[in-house]
View 1 (cartoon, chains in turn red, purple):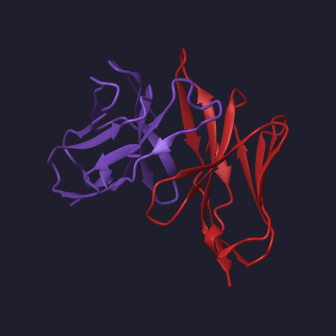
View 2 (view 1 turned 90 degrees about the vertical axis):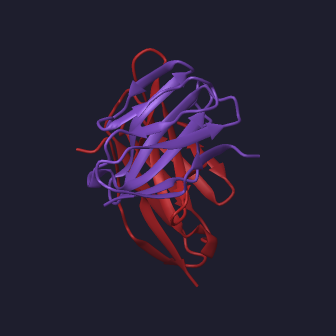
Length: 113
Length: 115
């Protein structure tokens, strides 16, 4: 079983739609959680951190449920420029102070005009 | 702002050749990592470093070596290239307590093909 699992999609939605992505993680010792965005043939870029209380950044809302080991990302009023692959990322503590970012395989989103 | 710089951007190697992928960051970050990205598998950690002189293995270290003689540089060496090492390689850096909130910054990637 993968440590971080995402629905690969693709999600094809019309402009203006609301779309939600889900992610589950298997390591209960995970400490930090993120959503990254990756455009085609580009590097991943941090979209937002995910906090237990939930957090919002403009049209984007992230939620974390530690009990269920579940993370979500909601995008409201989708724009064409939101088309990308969204990566769910979990931070796991290794030995000492070392940590490891563990990535899901990503969910592909295409916003259609 | 340069951030994380990787070179080269593209490379074709023959099986058995060796090469070094360069990574440099100018943000004074303690943590640096190398990942490879393959279709359908997400990014997988190859090696990482928590500071100059300190390196450790990640999930898929076989066939790769690293060293960290300075805070800025973290080169990845392929000892004897194999077709299975065809992939996109990303270098990342982050603050010493990197993943609490700030996440990691990635270089633009190196697309490596081994024939």
